[in-house]
Image 1 (cartoon, rainbow, N blue to C red):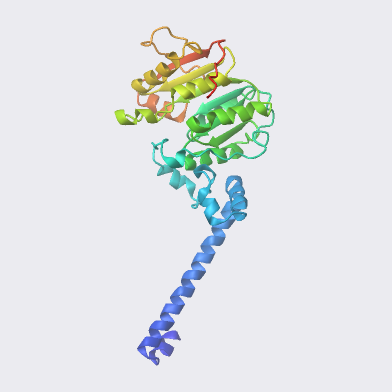
Image 2 (tube, rainbow, N blue to C red):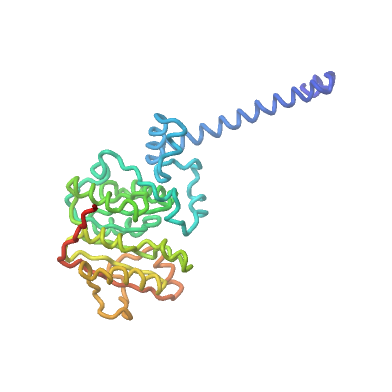
Length: 308
């Protein structure tokens, strides 16, 4: 009908009608897509919470939120996660912002704060902690992850596995937020930080990028500040230089941590945690070595130097 109608119209009128119809069709398609996205968001707790938070802020305020607290626009996050860069620059400005925690954190995510805490720094997709929480329910578990899509993916897995109340994840830069997170955790009545694991962290191979590595002198001091005597730090990597560098940072503060192995040339043959990370399984399947060690907290208290 339209073709017959258009054939009797002047050329410029035909183009106008075609343009209007194209715009209408495009708007209808976009509206249908938006409704599907909104329906998906309502089924995901982390996205629904972000949507509610953003509804009370302006677009400028939303852009100013730390990257871990901004909702992902694409609901098909599984595909996006596969495209996430393996290594990020933690010294970049966007990763130097403190993360936002709820006013009730951690009471709103952990049911029994009196339980001992296992902290996994650089937890990735959270597979290790998910299995630990299922195998050893007598602890609370907290994972820290710097890459926003990976953190949100790990957080979604908690509910799907039925582990809400025993395990949670926080998106942050550990070298920016660790002390604040642990201070808040203990202030709310959290149990002792008995175990810390740092497994297969970003290697940052280039000499000019070594300063980006997660284990720094300040991070070691922060852990010593919050860990009780005899608590442990478990380190492992498939790259010998990376493990040796992490180990050295702890050994440099031997007043706070003692290596279970006397020689730096020795490494643990087995994973004492009893649960392998996803990366660890991949390395072992390829018959490649994994370098491990454990350090234990001494009884020496951390000396806090007052600022002038």
